Image (cartoon, rainbow, N blue to C red; front, top):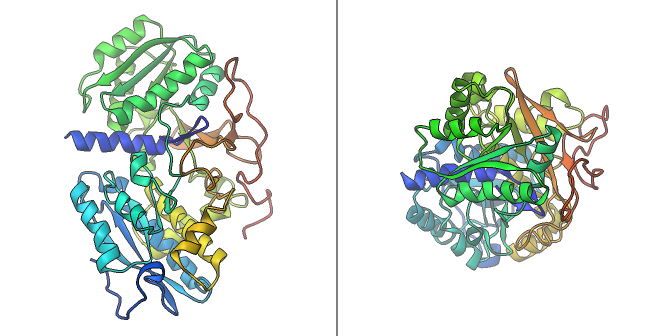
Length: 447
């Protein structure tokens, strides 16, 4: 989870939970030559980039689809004329197998052997190649679920920004608790920092806004096998809201155990589980559960297509150019990373260099991937939590669907005060800041 001024990127934290669990437990070669360094990989009619992801390994489904998302975006761009007369060639798609040493060596391969201009996308639990790419000022874009050191540097662009403050008070969780008039909250996390620090951010918000924490267990062994003792204690304390910072498997076990013990009607907020395939098979345990996203949910493509034409484009392009890849948060991270790369290229024109691209992106104050993500201010989001934006999307499981809730019409996003209020009740969201999706008025069509 990344938090900017209290805004939480729960998908990132969920992925980190999985990363912690795992750690506890050749592309097509370019045929012509290029100028080295600042213009490496730039040719008269194309720009060569490479991707680095955990295509195989313990959790490929959580990372590999980022490659498909980026490929679909580049194919769509190329089919529409490319960028300033050049096509984008995702020529190399390297697999680090979720291994830190392999990741570091593959990052070097992309730069020193494959001579790519940029790395788009990155998606891995162990981005040990990040410092090398930053040191060599290689523009790098991808799924940010890694420690801050791996994304440090002005040329490093995570999909939700490049700075994470895990324990910063999570205002949205406090807001959800207030909506349900919670009297006794419970927090549960694994005994790894990726999980426990995310829950600590929730705890900090609850303490700040006077929400009573009746039970807290931030040291569940990985993986979770038996949560009977925790649930017994929660029931005896009359807990009426549970925040789970476990992975999906652990949260499902928690929910089924609560059902066995008769803990019905309890508000549940999970960090991990926004997954249509999981809901299809586990709908009983997931009923009523809330999730928080930093991007428009996939459901808006059907619910509000005129408001979110970019989500429609993402889903249609993914199906057309990378058949067999369903929409997923990893695929969307690849798509939005490619969007940021291309947006920067359009800004610099034909005179493409790494230096000019990085400078252009770092002037952007309202990047939303054309209405798909909460705004990112690249002037500051390399090194600190945002002092401008604090917007997220709540979804709740209802039947076999994830349904957006608590949005500010016509948007599915809910935005909160920046900076976080120091104390007092959390009852109202603030008006949508400029740039917050949707960027198309209802009934206005795509574009």
